[in-house]
Image (tube, rainbow, N blue to C red; front, side):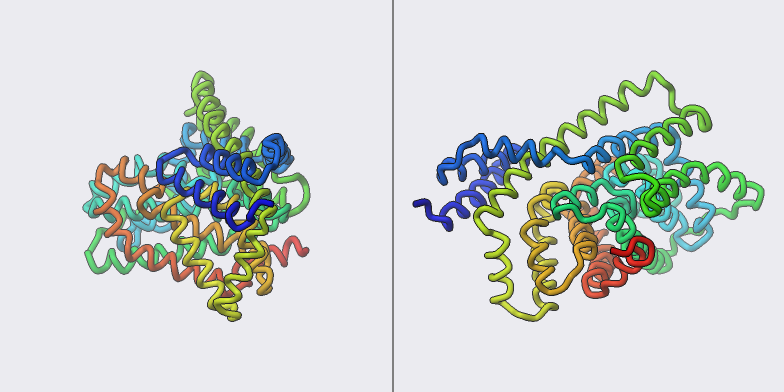
Length: 432
């Protein structure tokens, strides 16, 4: 009879060895699952069946539409209008461009749901603009990278859809609503940190905008902002599902970009669709491989073992939650967000539920932990893109990020230990 402890060692050990050897995560998950199944004598066809089962979900159909909507918005001039509207709101403060950067990311991230898309679309405009205005280059990149992480929390977020799948069908609508306050709170904390730094370094204030110009910019941006309103109102009111809302968002973004803003040309759609398909292929292959990997974790009773191990360390809810946060922060430094959502959720959700944490709160806590990982070395994808756009080495940018990390950690602790931050709006609008 196969030794279950050895099987767990083969599964997890081979996975980390493959990752260290720089094998793509999808193939690392599939290969480690295959090796373990061969050791256990389980037919490999079972892995294929679990992979097919993982992507056979109606909720997952929302992901391609959200990705497509984000691509259209990036190419259709919507990001520029978000930036101008943010400048109207906070541009006159000390360090105004830093605040504009954060608020624009809050608006754009709340529509695209992607930190990397945020950095790619807004960073090319914001970083040179801040540097030309007298801001330090490392600070400018740091603000852009950390503020982009709001997009994975503020609805709609395709990462929340992946968490819903991994958590066994938690309401996507409740998750969207739950991420709103933590996402905004993250932006406010970054604005406070940047405000303190801006005063200390005497960064400039923005130019005053006339009332007439402010009204014009606001009117121009409202159509873009209305995308998020349509999605949130439709999902929370039960008018349509998250998948239907994603399709409507993509169609709406296309119509606005082509016929209102007139910056998206039909001939550009072939490139946009190709980028969407490439991203979708990576996401769905990852979900399929992680589905088989997660099934094997459950078969080997790894969630139960982790629960018992954490409880053996301490029966204190505070200590266990802190340990989970530390573990997620450490994993976020070495792995990307999507695989960690799919791997960690089935392991850690039973643990936190033992201590009474709601799945919606845990989803926000998990996503925020991994969002911090997006801007931490060595594999933070948002940090990589920001450094490439800003043309500075990662080591120098990371040093400038330290005060911003502090603000993000404070918000993480609040989300972890104050349940109502993530549960108040879902309980108000979509009570379970």
